[in-house]
Image (cartoon, rainbow, N blue to C red):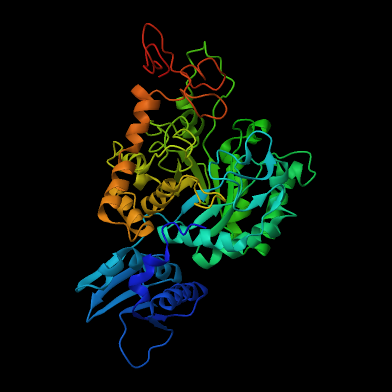
Length: 532
């Protein structure tokens, strides 16, 4: 399996030196294991307790006030020191030193403090347990099969899952949902009688500080519990969710929570009972709250049975219309997960109007690392500049999208069981860049790209590294020019979304129209004559 941005050579600077790792914790043992393996390869030494002699690198717990994941790094007297309040911070501090390479051991510099901007930096896997007749093992997956599931069962390749967790930690990702937001019959059972399979995945990911989440069906009380209703205000439904959630935490004590797609594209939800999205989300939030869990309620709600002749409906404002009236009604541990644009991960979109319109609601911003509309990991299309434009966008309150995403940042994963993780190996850059931008949304994406190139190809001569940078850096704009001129989205073949079709969705019920004719192009969104 390709080591991606963690080849052995990336650890050469650490592995050839003397290192001290201090502190009791399973994650500190992970840090020690990483350093020990590097020393085994490159001739250095690592100790767990101070003894005679000096050390080039000291990693330890003890710096209060940095939060669970922050760390301080400094260099003086010939030693580089990484200090963290919590073991996750020490793990991230180690990978920071790996990124610096030899530069981590040169000169002297004052302490630098590093903290993530967001407590939650998450990947959603759209993986199916059972192969779906249309979407296959992974919905919108372009990197082979699932890392977790195969033909209705758990794959059981936990060493590969652990290696995946290692890659994620190295770029700052700390949470993962292991099944598709479109929860089918087999996947629904992961919540109950198959929770042990999820627990196995959680065990494999835990050594790298990655918490496991689960996508659940809103209709689970009916499908799994035999109840006649899934009404979120029904006492028996609330009791069922409380009991099911308690059993989840018995199997996975550090379980992160639920991801829910409801009343969207045919998935069940609270509308069937005359209830609101806040009612649905808060029911699940109440079940999770005693255990410290969070419900991520997706805002991807719109009418997918539109009449193309009706110009009064506008898919781009659907999420805004559904959710803005509910601002302030969601529980503290409910997060509204909003796609970064108002439509659906197109090559170019404006920022979703929902972001910035709900100041009393915790929002998570969702992007798509898997290249559904951007070349499906056959084409090179590095999305760092797109995401950075969104995250740096300033609303009228002069607050950036990155600052408004108080519920965290989420990406749809582009990884699978492909030997290079992402199908096209250069698509790894999207996964790495998401993690680094989730840690620091104002980071310069091209500097992050150079980090990825330097780590992934540590021995590449300058012409090769410069060539990789040039190809990737211009790829998003290039892809836009030959697939979505004038910002027109959805000019793709229906269903699989690959290959050009100018009118592919123009007369469909999915509401993705460009309305191009001899008189003009686009949706009239004016208040006087259009959709407002």
